[in-house]
Structures are given as structure tokens and as C-alpha cells.
Length: 318
Length: 318
Image (cartoon, rainbow over all chains, first blue to last red; front, side):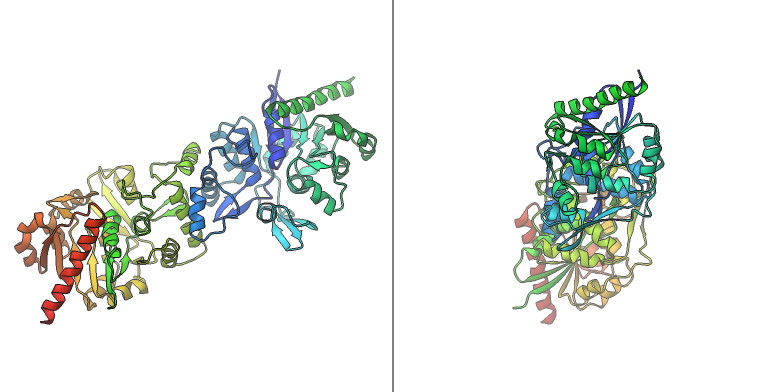
């Protein structure tokens, strides 16, 4: 039996957890299309937090207590930078610095960001493919009462405290999808949007010209897993951000946001009351337990999604 | 009483030890002119080993067991780079990486190397001034049976094992001395050449156009402390390098090498048999204990040099 080709659009901790679930399944060949729009330069090094969380998660390096960063980290490099007067509100561990130094050197040598990421994943022993949606620079900017901020400025330095009145993805109009990403969409058996923040993790992938078109043209169905359960986010500011930007801050709001792209919307049983409204948006709702509290739960959720796909394929072909 | 202005030309561990001795004396205002010719790019970061040894020594951060690097170091960043396939023969600790990251970022922003160094010294709480002889790039290249090598390649990767048949300081013809360095020579009460490798620590300072001329024009006398004791170097390849390049590998050879620059040559009592020959080279030899085995010995040697200067000044003015 050939492996089922799953292409996962994913950002942040929720995306990495979902990826880990799929990667843990036998007979799934996982390709992740990650989010690069919250990348930022720190101390002259190019830091790619969502991609790094994915790399650390899928290589087993992740600090499981916090969901990001590397286990057994040190802060000697950051302490030195602080002694030298640098701004160190962004925690960057010593092991993590090794990765940022490596990426930055290769970028400086003119290597393609996609190639650098594939090489890191290979060196880290990751079997899944981690792709970038584009090799160009796309930068999320967040409009708050304090003005426009970089995503990490809003997310880490200000701990998501300011209310968000607008989002802008600098550079997205000029960004072209990578051929690898377009192929991963075209060749997929199943396309899944991870339970990531729809507005700042998934939107900067979907809004790159050609990506949604490729998804619509693909033979694979498109599923999404809700990042919200009973109107609450598991981690991050998605619920508050959706509310302040005029979306319903619940599973229905996520479904509405993805209208026209999805075939199936996977939400938590706690949100099954939205069944009719989600159907009305033009997709089929499926309810299961979507909280990924540990590896077993991640693998079970990924297995549920695969099972839905298999059942659906049978249903359609019957 | 105003402080005695001592300007020390210094590279490597011997230079840092001598600097520490002077810095530990009351009534000495120390300016160090360091060596930048063994700088090298590692992993896209600009590493300046001699300057860093000086910074770490004078700030008390130095690893006293090995004489270089920072105490309480980690190797998490380097381990990550090794996992990613990078060449990691050059040990760079996590704290050390913080400094290289800082310097590289500021260089990238177009700051003057001298200003960056002065700022690091200030942030590290160092009272002495650490200057660079030039803000331009000078790179020591070492000719061996394996061809031309960078200094760190020869010194660290190959552990000084190859025999050296020639030295070249790439970029030195175009390098201009900094104004700070010229002023530190002009305004000094006493100029001292530290017990550093004459060929690869001191030569790339002296051979910058205008430095020797400034030393000759200065009102201060020029002293040197021998890096060799009884024909042996305390640390490093100076003795073998001098021999393979046709110099006498002993205190007399060092004195001959500095002929025309020095007023006084400070050598170890073990080398007092060279007294007449050193005089014949055109400088006054003074013999004392020059082995700097601990802080007390460093301070005592620095004090001896100051005492020689004070006696000499009295003698000349009488």
C-alpha cells in the first residue's frame, strides 16, 4: 500500500502538534507548508519561529513543557547580548541560536530559503517534508493602538495584549509560491489546514497568489481542523484577534472564514450545535475530540482525519 | 599624581596577561593596541580571537584554566551547528557566540570596528582602552607544506603542527592606522610591546604604514618584554615559527627582530647571558622574572616595567 500523501498548511504550536500527529501515523507521507510571515531579524540573525517550532517538534527536540523552543536550552548567548546592551525580550536559547546562525549564514550565501529548510530537516532526521509557501519575504504587521508592529513585537514583547484593528502582510503581493508548494498541493491525496491561527498563520499562506487557486484545482479534498473549541483558543490570540477584526470568535467563524476553500470542517464535539450553520457555509462539518493534549491525542486526531478521508472517498465513489 | 599613560601593543594570551598586569596597577592608564590579523569568519560571524581574549581577560570573564574563552561556557550552539553539518573545529562557546553575534550585527550596520570594540569594553566594565591598530581588514596567512592557510586554520585546526615557511598579511598595504592608535602612541608616557608572538601578533600591528614612524616620533620610550624564556615560548608556536623563518629562536632573536624600534628590552634572568649581544643590537637589556604564572606575577612584572621606566627617566634627566 502506498502512503497517503497529506499536505498540511500549518503555523505555530497548533500546526506543529497536528503535523506531529500525522507524522506519527504509518502510511502517511506528510508534507507541511509552513508559515514564514512571523519571521524576524534578531541581532542580525534571521529567526523563523513557526518553521523552527515545526522543525523542533518533528525532530523531537521541542521543549514539551512550553510547546516551542528546544529542550535542554541555555541562555548564555542571550545573557552576553544583554550584557552588551542588546534588546533581549525575544528569548533565543543557545541551541536555537545555532540554528539561526546556520540559516543566516546560508541565506547570506544566497541559498534558497526552501533548500535551507529542507536541509535542516534532513540533518535533524525529519522524515516529513517541510516546505515554505514562498522563498520571498512576507512579513505580518499588526495594527494596534500603539501603531503598526511586527508580529513578534505584538506576540512576544507585548504578549498579545494590544487589541488588533488590522493586519497587513508586507510583501505578499509580490510573493510567488514555490514550485515545491504548488506540487505538494497538486500531488496531495488530502490537503489539511491545521488548527492554527487562521488570520496570522494560515492567511499569509493562502493569500500568496496562486495557492488558493492550486487548492481549488487540486484533486485532493481540503479539510480544516478548527483552532477554536467552544469559543476558546487552546493557545495564542486567535479568538480575541478574530473578535476584534469582526469575525465570530468560534468554530463557526473559522468555517465562515474558510468558505469556498473547504470540503470538510473538523470541529470539536463541543461545537456540534454549529452543524447546520457550518453546512450552510458550504462544507461538511465533522465533530470529534480535537484537543491535542499529548502525542496519543495528536495521533488519534490525525487518524480520525485520515479515517474521515477514507470514509468520504468510499462514500463518494459508491 | 596623574596616571602614567602606558600604551601596550599586544596580541594573544601573553599580550592579555601583560595587559592584566598593567591594568591591575594603580596610577597606570592603560591603552592596548590589539591584533586583528587572526580574525576570521566562522558560520557567518566575525570572530576576533586576540581582541576577545583581551576583552575577556580585562573584564575577568576569561577561562583561567585555558587562558582563552569565557568561564562557565556552554557548547549548545556549536553542537547544533555540528548537527547541521557545519565544520566546528573552532571551539566557540555559547557566551562567546553572543559577542560574535553582537560584533557581526554592528559591522553589518556599518559601525567602525574600533567603536564596536570600545563599546564592548565599556559594556563589559573594562577601564582600560582597547584599540584596534586599523579599522581595515588585515589577515595573516601562513605558508606551510599544505599551502597557504588562514591563521586559525594553522593555529587551531592544525594545532600549529605544520612548519611555517612564510607569512603574509593580506590587506596590510592598504590598511591605515586609526587616529586613536596614532594618538595613543603620540600621547603615551611609555610604549610597551607585550610578550606576544613577534611574527604573528606584533608584526601585523607594526607593519601597518605609519605605526613604527609614530613610535619613533613619540616622546615615550619603547620597551618590549620577551615572549621567549631560555629559548622556549610560554604558549604558542613563536619559537618554532622564528626558527623556521630564519630568526634565532630565543630572546636575542626577538631583540634583533625589534632592532631600531626599542629603547629597552626586558628579558628573563635565564637569558642574561645575552646582555652584551642585545646591547650590540642597539637597546638596553634589563633582566627580571618575566614568567606570568598568576595575577601576582603579572602585576609584579608590570610593576617592574614601570619601575624601570621611572628609574630610566630619573637617570636620563640627571
